[in-house]
Image 1 (tube, rainbow, N blue to C red):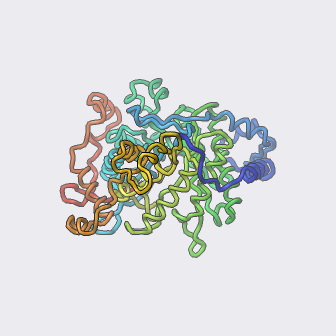
Image 2 (image 1 turned 135 degrees about the vertical axis):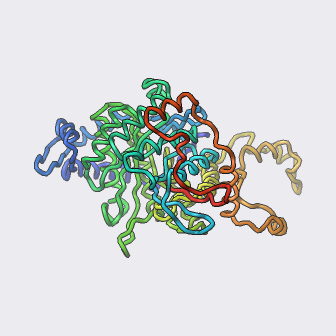
Image 3 (image 1 turned 60 degrees about the vertical axis):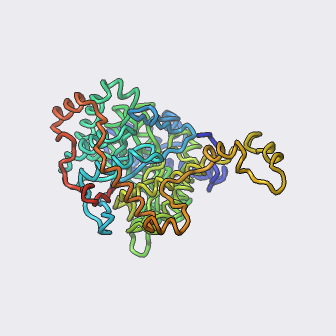
Length: 496
């Protein structure tokens, strides 16, 4: 994709400088709480001041900038096929799924149910076929597994059914270790995995201004392994952040930079990705909102902040708070994805399949969002202006009153410059009626059924699969849990 100037900039250069200055003031004057003992000692060694009783650390601006500068400016999230490599920080915008959702939407019933490991297989297989989903963030939490089984089984299911990069949240220290050891076996060696990391992990901080003991420890564990790590913060306007968008950006920036700094104290230069899952609170009932336009604006503005610091960025967009596949589901997802992408975000997670306050995944929404993301990707590419595209020679040949249907360049430009939807219906009404008067959701459902009716591809070498399953006690195929049956045309549902 041709790199273009970012088309949406909610912040001016002066705004960015003021948010940065406010961030540094908070670090120096207010400080932040560090509950993880080893992390506290690491920060204490570089702190401007420390309150040991309250476990508050204060850092001066020079220290913050020096620690942040240790983080690499690009992070490559590799696929097991090179065509799926995503180079965050390169100027490209990548899209992925997101989670971790608890429920799946049943398309036919219009109801939700708890997600299972089988559902995760279905979501993975569908996402693997969608050309505008660049990497696969494990989107569902399998309710049919014990907590200590979740990490390994989620990653193994993903690796079994896609060769796109696999990213996922983690829930136990042993799970983190098992997943990395498994990935080393699949890669061929620990060194091979570090050279081409086809997995990455997510460890979240706690807003506002707090590093808790559990995820602080997980963050340190992954950073120490040198595996790519996304470290998002999730401040909510009016709850864990000021209601003002500028104030929320200060908390977002502080919280994410705390996480970035910890990774660099543990392992300088380790591949870390600054993350933002910021949104707003519905003050009517104090609930989380997944799709307010203000959340998209905060995520777009954060793209400008990460460009200022020169570190890769994991953004959030594409969620809808709709409970069904209606107009709301489409317009909320489209607006947020477009704004955050046009701001030049490196990787946008939650961009496909996620709805209902991030609680539910829909396989049909994956397909619909893939179409939206194709349009967004085309908008990000911009308009190429050169002697050939200006087409003055063609204009002169055709002249007043003519047409360009027979021009040689028409077909070439049609292919190169125009987005061609796979899901949208562009037929005339009589043809649409003759074909069953299908809605976009119905057409998406048909594509889901088509994908899941095929025999799953064997994406892991048989010998490697056998060794992994033997070592970790995994069930062959990882699909023993219940879930929708494609043969019964009830294959709609999913969760991030």
